[in-house]
Image (cartoon, rainbow, N blue to C red; front, side):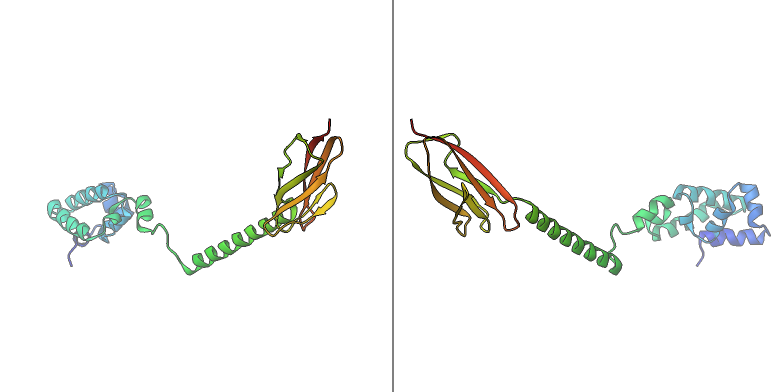
Length: 212
């Protein structure tokens, strides 16, 4: 099939000219001349350059540039538009934004497993080193009691142990605990300590006043 490139190639050979001769006469680089003759227009800087080079080259050879450019336009209409853009632009366009290959899939799978394991170890580390949660609902801070015995209520982790002023207290399955403390006249320090199964402790002290 006749193409713009084959037309200038045949004309150059008929005239007995080398690519170097054409380069010297037209100032078109040899590699661009060879690209035009091979119809490799994607090797040229842009479509505008391709048209300009082809027009000058065909006129230098004595060809009708209008006819040659008509063949060029017919060829480029059939080619993907991206092939006529500058190389630095076409490569990102022609390449898929993300291509999932077996290697990439395996790498993603391994990375996912790594982060899952990392998260598990971080969770375990925190569980081993963090004290249990401890809240005391009663008595309130700086509470003044009117009776000698007061209720101590609170909540902690379900697997923690609780002592109130050094005496162990039952912790229910939901983490709640309850006990009573006998007060002495004056200010009493009620110390609640929760200890996790890993030996980490949290404590809260409430000052309770009793008596005149």
